[in-house]
Length: 77
Image 1 (cartoon, rainbow, N blue to C red):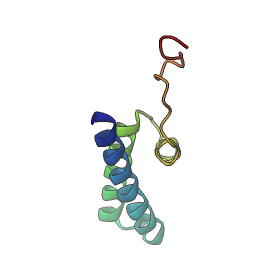
Image 2 (image 1 turned 120 degrees about the vertical axis):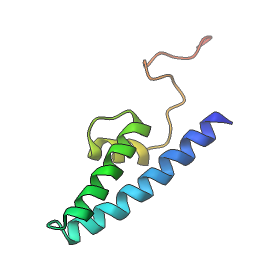
Image 3 (image 1 turned 90 degrees about the horizontal axis):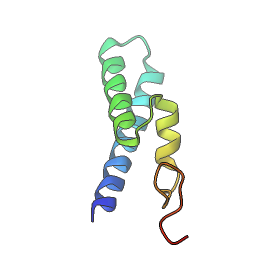
């Protein structure tokens, strides 16, 4: 099912983001670590449709909303 695949992608990118976040916080002056962390931020933002890494992480940690993104209820409700 597509929803499961999307959820798997979000979960995978969130784990990657958190791992690189820890490495970056431990070594903020390392340009290679910074570049990988920025890549992880960009990937997480892409799968969550958020522009900020922190917002993307928060969105990834919340359970999926069953309503469409427009905030409207599904037909019949």
